[in-house]
Image (tube, rainbow, N blue to C red):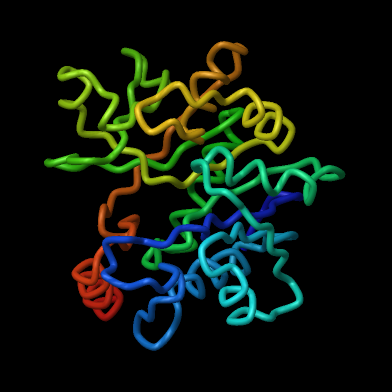
Amino acid sequence: MNNHRHLSTIILAAGRGTRMQSDQAKVLHLLSGKPLLDYSLKLSRTIGSERIVVIVGHQAELVRRAFPAPDIVFAEQRPQLGTGHAVLQARDQFSDYMGIILILCGDVPCLKAATVQSLIDRHCAEQAAVTVMTTLLDDPGSYGRVITDQGGDVLKIVEARDASDQEKQVREINTGIYCADSRFLFEAVVKIKNDNSQREYYLTDIIEIACKMGRPVRSFIAADCLEVMGINTPEDLETARGHLACG
């Protein structure tokens, strides 16, 4: 499906998912008989990924054993210090790679290949350093807010817990799905700092880093917010099951 020469995927799958009311790794929870991670892997293959690197952490060995396919490379994040730190664990797998890297979350099972292809197309057309997939919510809640200028260019993504009252009014939220130039990505993640309330290395900080470097940052708004919904609770699993059933 991919029309671009070099495309690879990193899937973030290290989390435990404490709100799932289970000690099981979140990506091993079943949705319509398949582990959540299976959906992101299928999507990665459908869009023509040359390389698929899965970042594991909690119950890493169980996740590896559940997915023995030869086209998957696993990289372990230990300890787990945030999404930016997670992506950094894939750096060695891309030391000889120049192209596009798609970053997916292992707990977003409803995402469609056509939507991802539209993200990639926009990224390439705009010659962006990084393009983030966003969506609009009436109640953004705990999601990171996407801050743009008057022209619509992305300036930064602010985690809800670090957002000002004005920033919390923004309806455009970060889905955690990105498309990035490989050279820029790994140059940026090593610059991420953990000076935030969680003391974590947020992948979202690569947006500000790109802006400071004078590199273009774009967003792609997914029309269907349920399609980009992450699974955080057993109730989310049921919502996703109904969404997939409706096609």
